[in-house]
Image (cartoon, rainbow, N blue to C red; front, side, top):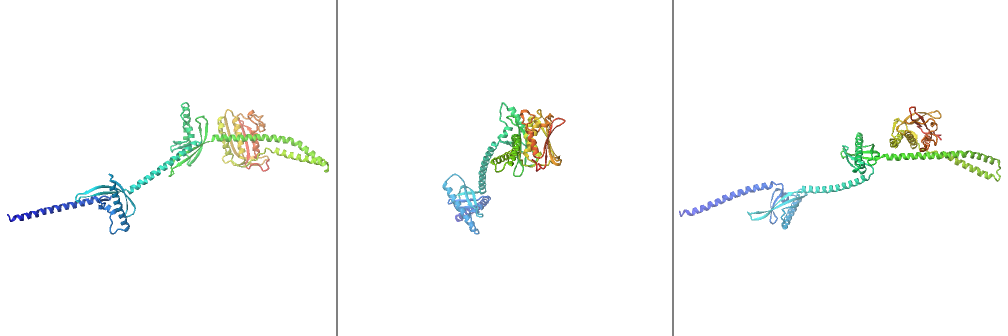
Length: 539
């Protein structure tokens, strides 16, 4: 037993050593397995993960981090320089963060892409770590690539700033446009594709959205509603026209005065970049006042023509009366000059008398031609003149309950004439016809081309304009004197020169102006004008 004791002690030591070796082998194998799983776990991340020591030296890195921080023997100088720069930047950043001693674990770091050389922006999440086997401390850092996110954020921020700037410009432009529109006297309305009013300026609001007034709210609201209904119906009719720019006339009512307004509406479509219509802008122009001004201008011109004609007639009468005795004086002086010798002392006085009487004769000839208005002749559309004249007197005719009917030849040839003078004649005839029907009636204006027999019984191409009314007609005893100057059936209201001037205008164009009573009642005035204008030898 004593002899075997040393062997037993040695065998126990060997067995204990064998157990330790087996335990160490098992622990190493387990550690290797854990290390293998840890490697797969760390490299499963696409983001770089690194472990650094207290001296900020790289201890461990996954595959993504190795691409940024570890060089290879086959790397180009540029790539090696970029990786060296990354190590320097990362180490400097870790040193700075350690000195700051702040609790913030997420920071931002800028590195270099070793392949492309572009700037890379990372969010770095750091966490302290301790290796208890070795008894050392370090830092585990996870780098999150936020380059695209930062670029998108920067671009989004820049876009937001641009949008804010554009929005401010749009707001300023809108305010400026609104200020301009509110100071435009013409009504402007914007409607959508359903003809619903989207926007309007102050002038349009006065017609379609009057201010609230409890005393007259009912009447003004009804007028505004009628205006809105008329405008909506008008736009619906205009929409049938395929043109992008359309125009027409619309009658509205002033909500304050109840006056009827004649509005010329011009509608323009607003299209988006693809060509779809998104809105319609309508601009209104009160043409009733313009036509009233034009009518007054023509009436004033006609009145001035009448005064000038009266002055010319008076001058012609005086010249005619003086010219007869002046011719006798000239004949007597002529006989005296012939009978007195040239060396007679009184001969020079007779010569002076002869010269002065000749000068007086020239003055009288000028007075005889005082009222011969020169007209600029041009091809004139009589149908167009009738349309213009109707527009000028439409309001006055409605006030008198007089309707106007037109029977115009479509292919009516143009006439060489003065448009202003012929328009004066048409206007004068239409107004006279309306005044002849105080209780209302119908004025019919017609045009036709025909062959007219001139004074020399030569058939010429001519155009006839007729103005007929349904009034009581002209008394038979007045018909022979209707074109005489200062003859009027209106009493003190008329000058008696309108028809006389109209006759003179027709005659100065080589035409005629005639009047007759219709058997069924009423009067017909017919003006015939040669197409080629007055003859060359016309006075």
